[in-house]
Image (cartoon, rainbow, N blue to C red; front, side, top):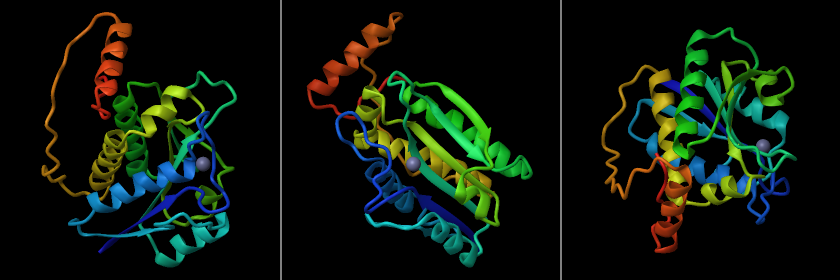
Length: 220
Ligand SMILES: [Zn+2]
């Protein structure tokens, strides 16, 4: 059976980036990871996580566990942060362009996740600096799902419907990477309230819906 390693960033004494309202990156990636774990059940993929609770694991341990597991692919999940609080968007990082399957996975993932929040696709980037990308022996990618330093980003990442939507997009792209067809059992019951030419009207309508208790309302 093909093997997949999911690395959930930070944890324990290392909470990662912190939003302006105090949300921890380590908690958000754990929520995404838990949803993703559920969504990957039923596929012929042997999945291993670095952590399934709020605990500290060093960077070197993370790649060692993945290498010992002999994973076919490695995906690390993080939330971004910037000193410019207006910044939003999705990025996917890789060590190199060597693996064409991983390249198209990374492009697709970046595009699909950016669409959930209607934010910028900041693109797939290369870095020799990320420890988990440098020290893993299998094709590896790292996603930065939006910026927790942006107040709207932080708010969106606290909505359970958005966490689920991110997990679904990650799952769909992973399933495609492993060459499986995706199952169509994730039924979403969609309710459309309106379509607006002015973005501010759409933003306002979502705010009204959220204030009324429809916490997973979002703009398409
Ligand atoms: Zn991080």
